[in-house]
Image 1 (cartoon, rainbow, N blue to C red):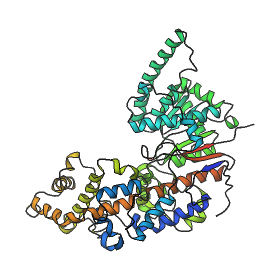
Image 2 (image 1 turned 90 degrees about the horizontal axis):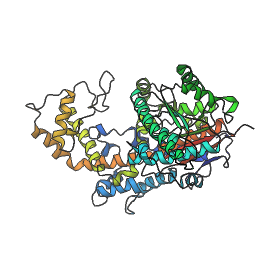
Image 3 (image 1 turned 135 degrees about the vertical axis):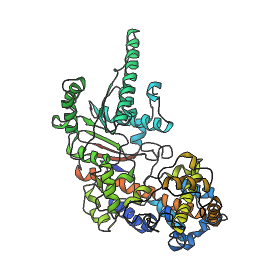
Image 4 (image 1 turned 30 degrees about the horizontal axis):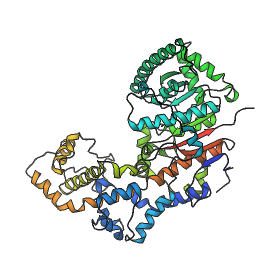
Length: 525
C-alpha cells in the first residue's frame, strides 16, 4: 500500500492488539470479509429452507451449534454478546470466532483523550431531557460534552449540525453549554418538532437565567441559541454554501446575522463558514460531510455513523440493490471514500454488498440481555417457513423459487405486519401474511391444519436458522470496522496535517454505534 503520510501522533486510532499499521489492519479486514462472503451473500433468511442452506452451504462440522447438548439457545445468545465458546467445539469453528474477536476495533471508551472530556458531565435540565430514551440521554450527554470541549479548545463560534433530527443534541449544546447551533435536517416534521421544543426550552432557560442574575447570583456565560432549518444537503455543497443559502433565504432575519458573525470568526480559515460538528447522521450524509469538511473551511468535525445498510458502494456487486437504494433514498455518496483502500480492498475485488451492509447494523452485544432476542429468531423461522408454503403450494406463481424475486425483477416481500401477527404461533402469522399477499385463506387446500403440519415438520429445524443468523450477525463488528477505518483514512490522506481520531464515545452495550470520527484542522497562524 502506498504511503499515506500516517503520523501516529496526529492520527489516533486504537487498533486490535495484533496490528501495528492501519494498512495491515484494513488488508486483514478485507481478506476475512471476502472469505466470509458465503455467509453474507448466499444466506437469505427467507429462503433458508427452500435453498436448504443448512445442508448445502453451512459447514457440516459446525452443525454442533444446533445440538442443545452442545449449545443451548441461551449459550447461543451469550456467544453473540460475550463471545463465550466451548472448547469442545470444532477447531475451525473456534478459529472463526477468534478471528472475529481479533479483527474488531476496540470499542471500550477508555481513551484518556476522551475520558478527560466526559469525566464530569454536567446534569441536564429536565426540559432538555424530556422525550429522550435512556439510550438517547447517554449519547446526547456524552457527545455534547465532547463537542463542547472541541469547540472551546479550538475557538469555535458556532456549530452546524447536519442531520439534526429532533434537535436533542442541539438543545443540549445551546442550553447546557451556551453555544450557537444551526441544526439542519431534510425532514420537515422533525424540524418543526425541534423548533417547537427548542423555543419552549429557550424561553424557560432565559427566564431562569434572568432570575438568577437579578438575585445577585454569579452566573457563568449566557443562554445559547438554536436555529432549526428544514433543508436537504446535497453532495456537491460545502458547509459554507449551505450557510450562505440559509442566510440568503433568511434575508436580514436573526439567523442571517448569526451566520454573518460565524463567517467572520477568527477561528475560521480564510474567513470561511461556521465551524462544523455533527452527531449520528443519516447514512448518505456521513460521507458527504467528510468531503464537505475537507473542501470547506470548518475547523472541527465530529461524526458518529449509523444505518450502513442505506449506503451505496462505488464498486458494488449487487448493482441492482445499489441502484434501487440510490434512487429511493437519493444517495449520491458511495463507500469506500478513501483512496487508501485501492491497493487492498479493490485489488481483492471486495464489495461489501447490501447484505453485508445490513449485517453491519446488527448489535449482537445486546442480545443476551434483551428479552425479545429469541422472539426475533422465531420471526425468521416463521418467514422462512412461510416461503416453503408459498413455493410448495405455488401460491404466488410469479415468484422465483430461490431468489425471492418476481419474474419482472421486482422484490416480493410480505412487508411490515401489525403486532397481532406475532407472538401467537405460525398459523396466526401465516394468516396475516396471506392477507397482505392477497392469498385466499382459509381455502380447501390451505387450512389451519395444513399450516400446523408444516410447523410439525420443520419445528426441529428452527434452531438451525437461529445458529446461522447469529454467526452471520457476529460479523457486524468486522464490517463496521472496515467502514469506520475507511472514513478515518479518508481524512488522514486528504489532510495529513490535521489531527484525526477514531474513538469510542459511549459504552458499546448501551449504544452500539459508539465510534466517533473526529478531525481538527490546524489553526491559522
